Image 1 (cartoon, rainbow, N blue to C red):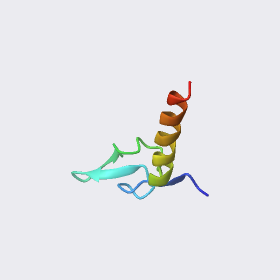
Image 2: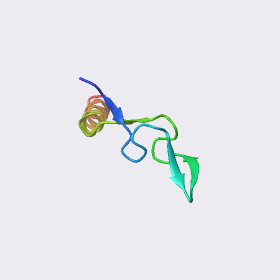
Image 3: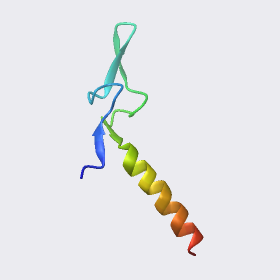
Length: 54
């Protein structure tokens, strides 16, 4: 399983065009990847479970 996928906004390029000029993608901050939805849910569940089990 892959926890990361390419950024939806810049399509994995790390840059978007704004007014004809290339600019760093604000969503992924030039990392070109995003965490998948299922992994976000899993991490949230794990944090909640671990904080309750202490």
